[in-house]
Amino acid sequence: MTNAGDLSAGDTGRNELCAALENRYNQFMARMLSSSGVMQDPAVMFPKLAELIGYLDSIDHRADLATLGRLLAKLDVSRCDIATTCIFGVKGYRRNCISKSEWYELVACCWHSGDRTPIHDHRGVSCAFKVVEGEGTEIRFAETPSGLICPTMSVKMPTGYICAADDSDIHQVANMQAAGQDLITLHIYSPPIRKMHTYEWGAASTVEAGDCYETPC
Ligand SMILES: [Fe+2]
Image (cartoon, rainbow, N blue to C red; front, side, top):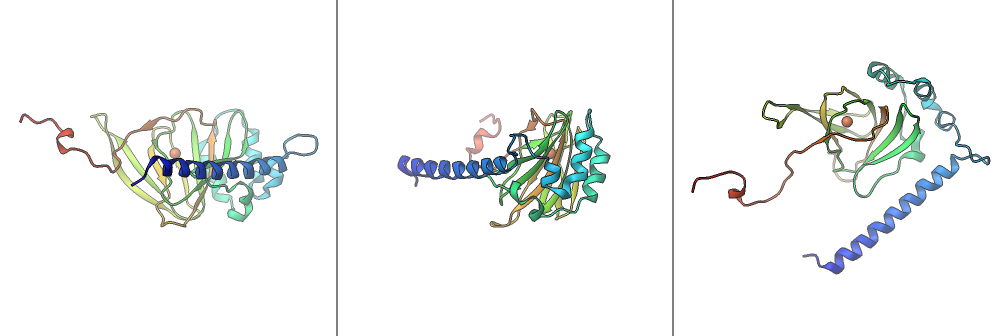
């Protein structure tokens, strides 16, 4: 059983951990600033991403999904190549921005075991990503005439796997590996996601059976 004191102590520890992570991220961002205060070129800081960032910096429109897939396929990148951006969250997966403009954001997503996105689609945004380390799982859904969504398949995504999501694709991405096994993915969104369209699906819980359906008696 947990009492209020335990919750308070847990929150304090979590807040301290959050603060430590923020501090580390701020230190990273500070290293990206030159003495003039201008952000260093991410393509210089992360040479293996130079071609990809060069393309992304050149666009003045929404990126073509097939092009993103081709660029990610050519990419030979591992955790050590983007280590300074590989920062994990404590309340779920964490998005670490590497480079961005009005037309894109390039993000290293770090997932502990059990971390997951909401179920979502990508209306208005081109989204493609590559698994840099670990194995991810993608669960795909389809809309039904009822208005409910229905899971259609799940896909294991080993290191090197590339996923490109069309506007209407509905999916959830998760790290379903055992505790201690990290997942790192490199995502491109074009344009940057400002609002995410999400869907509800049942999570495990215990409720009164009678609350789940209507019964005449
Ligand atoms: Fe997605």
